[in-house]
Length: 63
Image 1 (tube, rainbow, N blue to C red):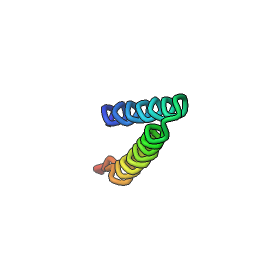
Image 2: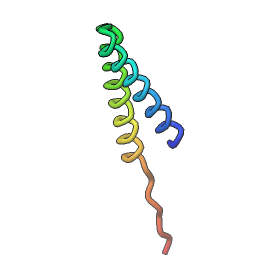
Image 3: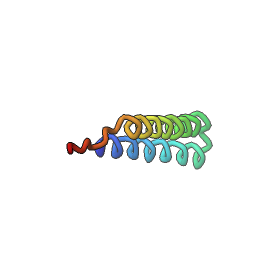
Image 4: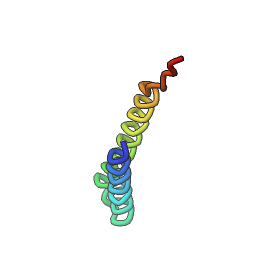
């Protein structure tokens, strides 16, 4: 799960760089691509985080 967090963070940073580049140089397409990378990766991260929390097994106590 830790590697997946770093991959998601990397894509969010990449999307941020695209968004800021598009805003700075008036390249609308690059800016929108960056925005959708940020949005898509955030949704993917939240989906995987919730899926892992729901499927986490609790420790069974033997008495």
